[in-house]
Image 1 (cartoon, rainbow, N blue to C red):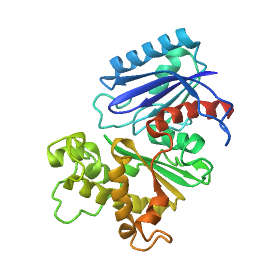
Image 2 (spheres, rainbow, N blue to C red):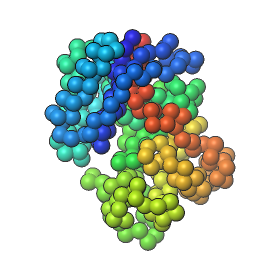
Image 3 (cartoon, rainbow, N blue to C red):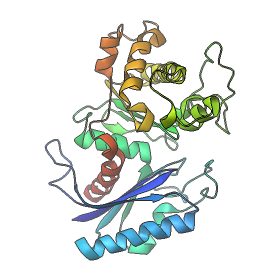
Image 4 (cartoon, rainbow, N blue to C red):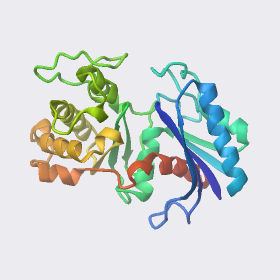
Length: 305
């Protein structure tokens, strides 16, 4: 079966058409990507029109799309029982609040659509084909333009009344840091203190322009370690996957591992050194494809349900 996959981010929509493998079991291979495109996230009408044009062109070349999976920036409504299912909710991204993503693609292509958060999709991709294969209890956290996380507990994605908002954990301010925070809802939450816009606002330059070894990254790792410690204590994961443009950097991963034991304060058994933390906190096994393949995985699991 040919499936469509969308990793809908606040900066860009990454779209792909893929051919499914043998299934989603432990021995399955990930879908084979046949065509891929990146579309800048502009105002909704133009963005959605450009992504739809990609899928029409890809279908003409590779065959009709049978299903489509979307992992979207949020907050979103992932519960099919809700009248707002498939929509982006009250988001700081201008113009996108209330947009019916799932409905748009269902109407455009007349195919079943699966829908969840981008981080839940990435967590699913890692569980099916990446670093968390065979692990029932783990967290995937992405750090980039925003911060968000998805959790597997007892082999199932956590949703609850909506979906977890791990990026909005409240933090203790690190001594000497006067930056108020970039989050329009909470100011100094994890996302407000450690996501890309916070780094840029605090230091006056984008993260990609800040050299390794700069004080910015020491502060970044300190806040991330604090947030990760809270999540580790709350969820007791067997594995913690740190991804995203910032999170998966080798220097950030190393800095977080060095600071995590102190952030845990000796309360998590087995994490008393950076070496222990290295066994717990790992980069994505699928690299940049976690979210995209995970979105395809949403469509596959929806088909098997």
